Amino acid sequence: MGEGYAFEYPTLNHGRNLMVTEKKTTPSKKELLREIENLDKNKVLDPTSLGRTNIANLIAIKGLLS
Image (cartoon, rainbow, N blue to C red; front, side):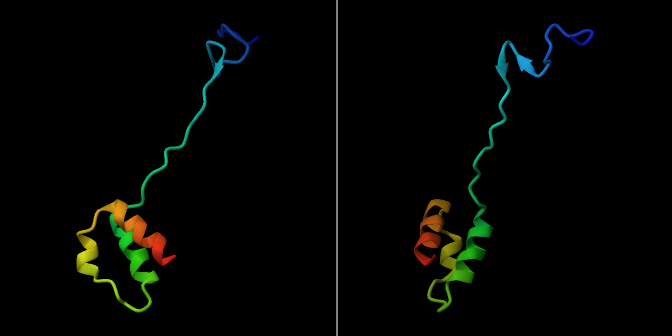
């Protein structure tokens, strides 16, 4: 046992392992607009209108174009 430590493994917290979880982040609106613009080969979608669309709908539009 190391000196000054109550337990052999100082990374344990009351007998439980500390786990690091990754947060899933939604892509930014600008990133989604760029990807949709690249996927829209026939330029059917209006970029100005897409800029006013919420992120959930932009994700759905991107899914439809993929």
